[in-house]
Length: 165
Image (cartoon, rainbow, N blue to C red; front, side, top):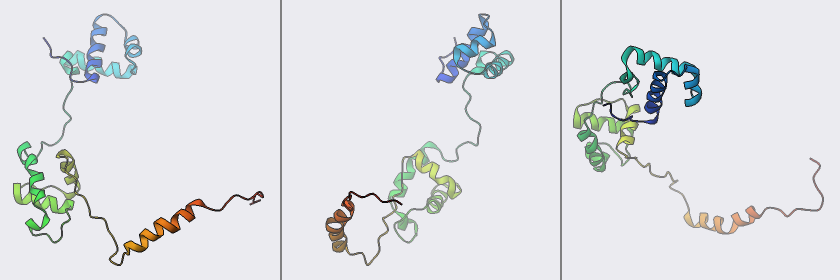
């Protein structure tokens, strides 16, 4: 017995194959399942060549993961140590720095542009510190926000005459 479908798309392809076995035309199948006739034609060709298993979900091709699940799970703990623990200046993680840590700890090279995918995979997000000017005057900002801004926000009152421009 075949295992149940893994997702709705696979279930739809298998349903199309069952309908075809019952004598339905490709046009009828396409209308019933809400897909194009071309899609049904491709599915039927795959099924004729490889049977119903050819309609099953196939993992997308690509290179195998370079880090094991255990290594990937260890990454957030390594990053919690901070960049200075690895000889970087400052408390800011960059993709290049994370790539260097991965290379040091696991011997695996990643391009910095791809490091963000790894960070997403382990649900780790480096937070950049807010940039603020050194000469920032918090008291003046609070005064402006509390006193000046409300006056600006009110705006001018509408007059009875309308502008012609």
